[in-house]
Length: 117
Image (cartoon, rainbow, N blue to C red; front, side, top):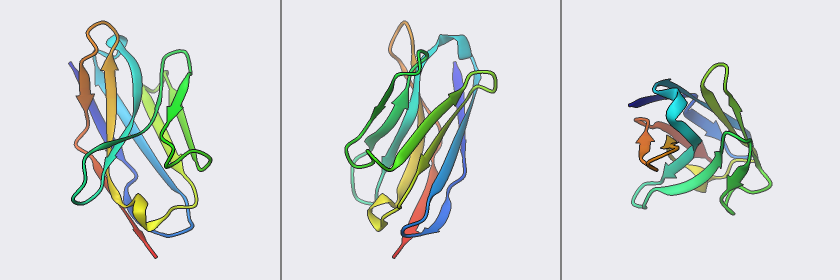
């Protein structure tokens, strides 16, 4: 099992940046991909960005050009920065990890980000 705990959410003004961090614990060796999803009010959860063990990055079109994702394997963390925030970035942001062998998804409890205009 893998446990994920997010931190860094809160209220942010539009145009500014945000940093989120996710710390993994448990069966860390089993993880391949770590990343972030978000769920805005009244909408389905959507992919934001991910990074695998080899450092390969994938990101949604909605954040391309204004995000940064990094992984610290020594600290078992994955960090997300989103720049030039927009009100439509308001959502609960969830940390995600994928089991390398089974493809099972693990989820954090989420952290709320509110962007005011």
